[in-house]
Image 1 (cartoon, helix red, strand yellow):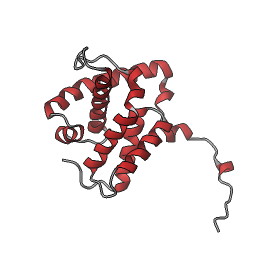
Image 2: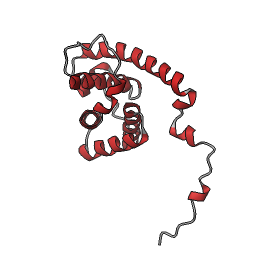
Image 3: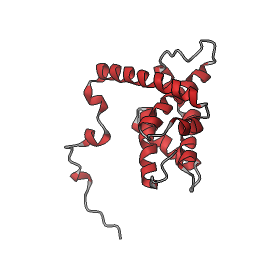
Length: 168
C-alpha cells in the first residue's frame, strides 16, 4: 500500500528523482516535472500523481529514449514501434517505482495499469536491464557520470552569483 505518511515535499522530491532517472537530462527532467504538476490536481493522491507522471512521460518523452531501447524477451518482434517504446518506458518506471518509491507490486500495477504478475516479470527483467545499462554507462562516461547534481556542484564557488539583492 502506498505510504500515506509522505509529505508533499517528499512527493516533489520523488517525482523529480523519477523524472531524472527516466529522462537522463536536467532540462528534460525540469520539463517533465513541470508538465506532471500542471496536469495533476492540487489535491491528487500519490497514486494519481504518479499516474499523471507516467502519462506525461509517455506523451512527451518516451519517444526520445527509443534510441536506448534494449532487447527484451517480453517484447514480441511484431509490435508497432510506439508499443515497444511504451513497454520499455513502463518496465523502467516499474523498476524505479519499486526501488525509489519503495512501492509494492500491487501499487505499481495500479499506476501502470497492468496485472501484478506482469509487473513481477517486468521487475525481474528490468532490474537486470538497468544494471547492464549502468555498466555500459560507466564504461562510456566513467564513474563521474553518476554524480548527483549536488555532487557535481560540490566545491564550486557560487558567491559571485549571490550578490546582495535589494528585494524592496
